[in-house]
Length: 364
Image 1 (cartoon, rainbow, N blue to C red):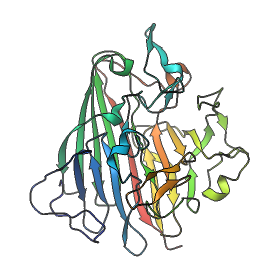
Image 2 (image 1 turned 180 degrees about the vertical axis):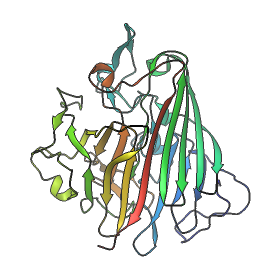
Image 3 (image 1 turned 90 degrees about the horizontal axis):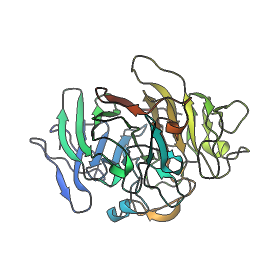
């Protein structure tokens, strides 16, 4: 365990032990790493898929609960729960028809059943066993995960070396850091695909949560969730989340049928410093999660397609709206949309991205 001073606060938390950093093997998850600071956040990360499997956060009374959805049966991470908590890439979100051109050369990627490339293709980063090492400083504790994606992997050009950090700070922050280098021009767009329920992963749905997104525009999509036309203003639409709104209310707005699975265009940032993208709040528990990122976009997915097939860690079937994913990333299909921020990485450059989840509580 990366943090030797962490201790268990309730019987529902993974047990800690003193001594030097160690990891625990698991037959389906590779190795699992458990880390955190006493009285604050505690995380469990699996090397299979560089996956956030659990996150225990205190409520307004200081009582921790696991707020990240994950299947009770680890084997489901290969099928119905494939993206739960995983690092997805090389390209998060969709590339239309699995095709793009780079430096005048066309490329064809592996595609899923709908004919498009989603989250890197049929054998994306979520399916890989990552190497891991512990990180521990006075202010941060966690794990660094490493992966080499070879030239031609899922159709992407260039050898790509990726490092993902999952770190907890003493101030109840969970940070995801991403870095990558390549030996040939390629595409890179990485994110974590965790689903959150701030009332607890087995508490039911997230309709009582309040959500605010700092975006004046969103990306309209067609029936296959491929971008359609220009980014549009959120004003006067179901996508206006600039002020906190209860999700039950937001999902009843005209145009939000079936829930959100859309990209929001975040306000420009400068200097590589994460700026606020969204705030999620559960009045029932007081937990509040602020999302800060260096990425230009935020994919909001309210899990409208969940049908109870996946049974969670607590034994509760995950049905529609059981959690919400707030995926910080470049825009969907941006390799084929010249006006969008470019996801191209070239030799001699370094891809860097940072997303911070800041946890606090409120009394109301």
